[in-house]
Image 1 (cartoon, rainbow, N blue to C red):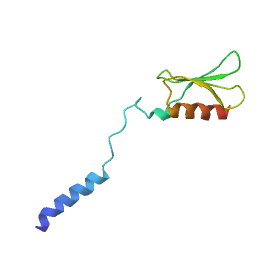
Image 2 (image 1 turned 180 degrees about the vertical axis):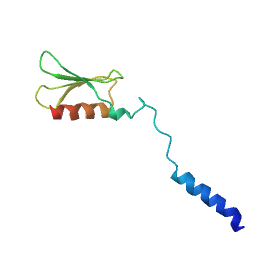
Image 3 (image 1 turned 135 degrees about the vertical axis):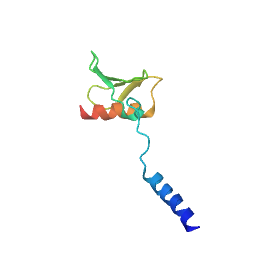
Image 4 (image 1 turned 30 degrees about the vertical axis):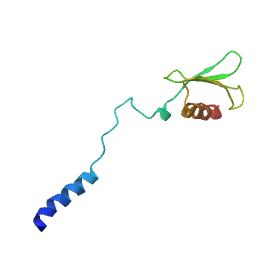
Length: 86
């Protein structure tokens, strides 16, 4: 009986040590996206994302003036994070 459980234990141990399937390039987490940044003629800062989300912030402060319907919470967080570094 002991000889039968040894291979099972070794198999389970090795399965627990195996690395997960690596993520394919380009399929990153959406909250890791880097937005397209643009300064508008009136001084406002615009941040655009791949899904069509556009967030406009005030010129001097990190305050959201408008955001599109396609925006999720993480898009606003990313735009505010980039704006705070300006």
